Length: 172
Image 1 (tube, rainbow, N blue to C red):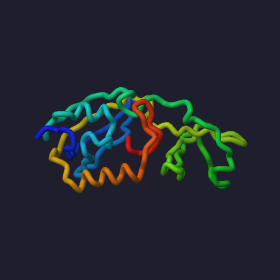
Image 2 (cartoon, helix red, strand yellow):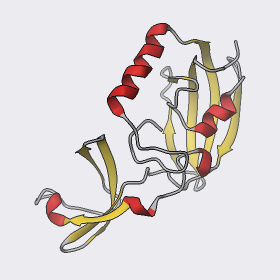
Image 3 (tube, rainbow, N blue to C red):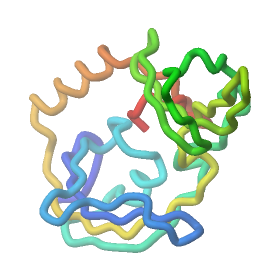
Image 4 (cartoon, rainbow, N blue to C red):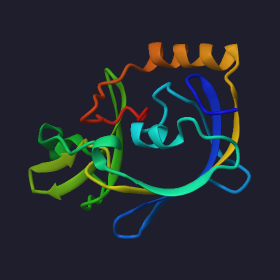
């Protein structure tokens, strides 16, 4: 069976960036599973997987525009230092999560000043070329339950992502 819209897909993968640093990897015996064309993985990965079958494997790169997009300067902001716990030893690169009206938001500390902290709400992989090593482990039609679950997730989460920018909703 070939991968097509609403296929359930399971892949083993390794993800690296240009520096060669390994960013993510599926655990042995625990592949990444998703419904194809449901927006659960980045567009560039889906494009590479389209029409492939179980056993297909390849190494390929995904440009940032087809991955997590380019960083949006509007998502880099200064916030009062008092928004952080008093005892927090802030350092550039630290990641935090905050509850917002749109759900959980992950951001990274960029700079720490005496009164203000510069935070970056862009996805950490925005602007990065992504290098995948992928093997297709399973392909089948998604079940009615899997498709219904997707609809429930969309209703609950909402998302402010677009083709050019992900605002940290965790779906892309």
